[in-house]
Image 1 (spheres, rainbow over the protein chains, first blue to last red):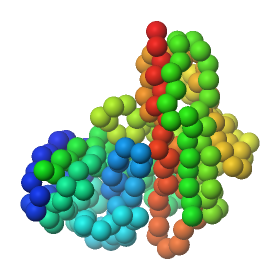
Image 2: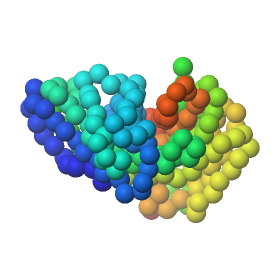
Image 3: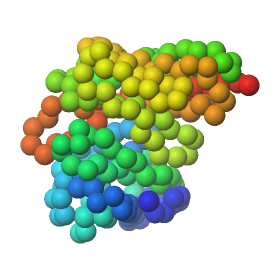
Length: 110
Length: 113
């Protein structure tokens, strides 16, 4: 699950998007999806308190304090961060990357 | 650089009119190719994983195939409820704990009754 499902905010405000999985998956991911660009990986985590940058980490940070929860943090939102944000999880390395997605959060930055 | 290209961008079919979607890829060491379905305003729904050339998988009216350079998603006698965006993604061999997918931009399928 992801929360909130929709959010409208103003430029410069901090934003936290949350993701919760009940599958006991080790890996969790944050993507953003934009028309014509597809899904792009922002960050992923392979264990509690462990994180790795994806392809577009600039302007974002993440937090994983518990195995089932992974948060995406925008310290100071900007208009170019308006997007659909998708969280995903996968069992572990040996599962050959089958990732399962949440319903998404639609973020609008004015 | 790893890359995934899907074609066509959009496809309109009549109910019962079979067709195929294409996913061409370039990847350094294929660990898996994945097909997802995405409905408007929702997250992608996992459909298939293919691991090696020659492999095929089926689910209801969908059949996915894989060669060394591309994958096809065949849709047999589609129904209006098959209307969605179909996404293709690949996983390559990356260092360390890196575990990521490279996605194409999808094919928007519309099936008219």
